[in-house]
Every structure is written in C-alpha cells, then in structure tokens.
Picture (cartoon, one colour):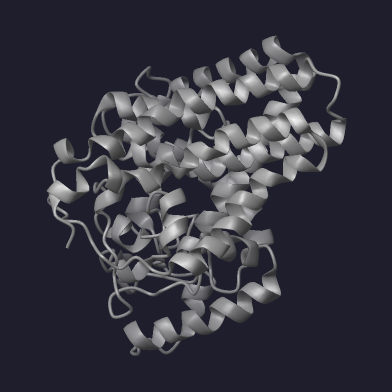
Length: 378
C-alpha cells in the first residue's frame, strides 16, 4: 500500500500530468499543418497502447484514507486543466480562421485532434471534478462540459448512471451483443432525456416546477450558449463549425469509453423491481499503467462505482476474484469497440465467463440481454 507521505510528493503525481504534453503538441501540428495534424490522435490512441505494453500493470494501491491535504498535486492537476483547455480551444479557433496555410481538410483534422483532447482529457477531468463536494470544483467541471456541449452529462452521471448502473433504467450500460453503432445513437437521446427527467423529478419532490432557477439545466444552457457565441465572435461561421467538430469528436470519445466500461455487465434482479447493490464486479477493471496516467485512473472503474467519492489517486485495483478485467487498456479497447465483429470476438466470451463466475444460478439471460427486466424504482 502506498503511504500518504509518499503519495503527497510531487514526483508521485508527475506521471499523471502527462496530459499537458498534448497542448504544445497540438500547437505544433497547427503550425505545421498537413498530415502533422494526425499526431494528436496517434499519440493518445497508439502511443499509449504501446506504452501500456512497455509499462505493464500497476497493481499497487494507495491508502484509501489519505486526506485531501496530501493530494495537492493531484487536485491541482484537474483544476489547472480548465483554463489551459479553454485557452487552447479558442486560441486554435482564432489561429485556424486567421491563417492561410491550413487547408479545409487540415482544419478539420486539427479540430478532430482538439476533440480527442477535450474528450479524452477534458470530459474525463470534468468527471473527476463533478464528483467532488466543493462548489468550485463542480463549477470547473461544468465549464469543461460546456466546451463540448454536453453539460447534461453531470446530471445524467450523478443522478442516473451511478444509481441505476447495470439495470434497464441506465442508458449507459451497454447491453450484451449491442454494437457501438446501435449504442451510440441510443445513448445520445436517452441520456439527455433521462438527465432532464432526473432534475425535473428532483425539483418535483420539493414541489417546484422544472422551470425553477435551481434547475441546473439553466446553467448548462447559459454556459453552452456562451461557448458557441465566443466561437462565433472569434472565428465567424468557420470558427463555429470548427468548435462543433471538436465537440462532436469529444462526445464520441466519451460514449466510446462509456460503452467499454460496463458492456454486458448487469446487476441481478431480486424480484419486484429490486436489484442487488453495486459491486466492483459490475464494471470492467483495467490497471494498465500508462493509459491510467493519461486517464487519471479512470480505468479503475470498478472501484469508482464501488466508492464514487474517492479521488482518482486513491482508486483501488481489484483482482479477477472481485472484478472482471479488460485484456487491454482503453486506447486499444475503444478502437476495438468501433469494429463490432472484433469487439464481440474479444468481449462476448469474457461476459459469458463473468456470468458463470458470479451468477451460476441464472440460467436465462434473455431479460438481461434485451433489457426487459422490470425497471428499478426511481
């Protein structure tokens, strides 16, 4: 176990700051143009897949009772990213719309790369921030999500996903044999509507209408409108289009990860709409070292759902006895998810093995596969 005094050192936190190397990289590709713009996707997907092979697994755990006072460098990391991403995104919009050396294809490629950054890093960091109790950190998370026009993710994630994961009420739990091409359009609509419904119902329990100023959707809409207006003012219609490209890529990156995290994993229905409590076995775990540096331990997802309030450096690795293991980190698994036959070949046998290991008493999985079990009570 990693002791708090070791964890508190800046040297221990330094590998997680690797994401900041993507900022000078994307500016270099913007200046060079041409095929150089593919460097950002290559560095996040392929380079970290290769680094995972070299660095192996990180199976050690930090002391989960480590106080926030010992986590200064980790907390600073997610906070500092917000202004850095903001300046990079809108700086690139200005640069791309005021230079002559970038072709239309190069601009699209550049903002595809920006979307990889704002999705892989930005949304991931917003996820860490939204789980914190402090208002300032939650606001920073909202700002990151507004940059990709996906502000409702906070409501959906906190009020729906964590509460109903592995049940038919959770849109984000990918069903067994459901390809990403079917999962993606489904969650885009269902997550938005379930998030709005959750906030509406929360207000209704206090005898307030959905139009009440306390509804965070007003904040979501205002922040997103501000981001769109700023892109338009800086870069005109071209700048707005480039902003929308990066937002679309970022959302796609997020939902690819969501697809991987819970594919085929369901909580046991106990009868009358009741389900077992969430356990580490209801999320896929991956402890690949390098990609967890980049993704600030998001791949230790089994522990995140088990203990949602833990900050990322304290998330625990769970062994095969407690949680199912992905064969590779997210950089490889998200690429596989885009190829349905390959995905099914890799993951379906693992889902079946998981079912035999944890639920040998269930003989008919059809209601789970088709999401036909009764909805849990709201």
